[in-house]
Length: 171
Length: 127
Image (cartoon, rainbow over all chains, first blue to last red; front, side, top):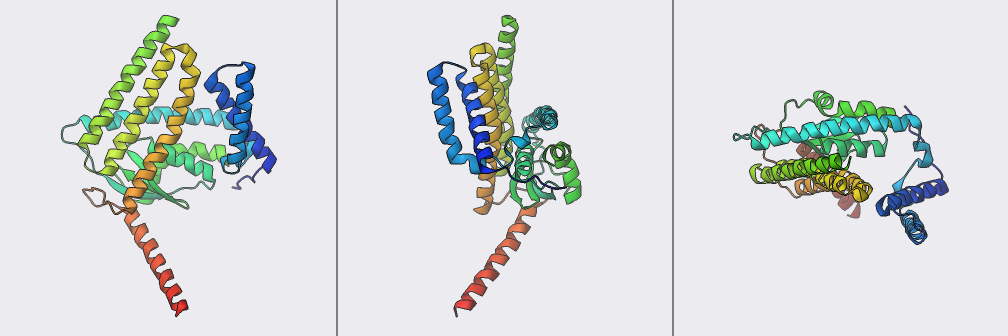
């Protein structure tokens, strides 16, 4: 699997400008001329400062296929997140506090840095796990209720439901 | 229609309040900083998200705004908790563990050894 190459600088700049401007529009929810002009100026400044780190692919990342899998990912993620919250609620409300915390590790198959970021954040927000550190392709996960410690088992337990979809989006 | 949105808004706000309460309870009950971050990241993120979304439903003019805020919370909250956890581990705050499961300690040990070897090399070169 090959990672996509970076888009050229002007494209990345335009992409950031476009995205920041959409966020501005969503936030002000007004189409009056002075506000739109201010938004254009502010997003221009923000894009000029941050476009180099903000995006790598530019518009190449926006594809119908990617959008579809992103939707699937988000729905899947919301479901897992609600489950995680109920799980933590159950642990906190049980008088005996049934926990067995520990830090485990696993290796990811993802190569893209953005994909790794999304995976790390998703892990943090779901069932009793959060990312302590990411070193190259190794994830160190604090787990509230450790059931397995072998890296492969851990991978199956924690990362597989996310990675299956992430691999489709980012590769 | 407006009635439905209002009810949905109140329900979301109540759910958010319950989860925020559970997050607070978790912070009091759990044993160490890492477990407490678990309660702090999960319960409070969902709590704040559904509370803000509920406010958005009560006042439809704010709905898009509240959606933007919800997305921002979902993106920023895990990063801050990760930074807190990593920072406290590197400041030698030991995790509370029944069975002493800790893969990260092994990694830090190896990394520390490498650094020490490199330092030793550098001092040798200076001599």
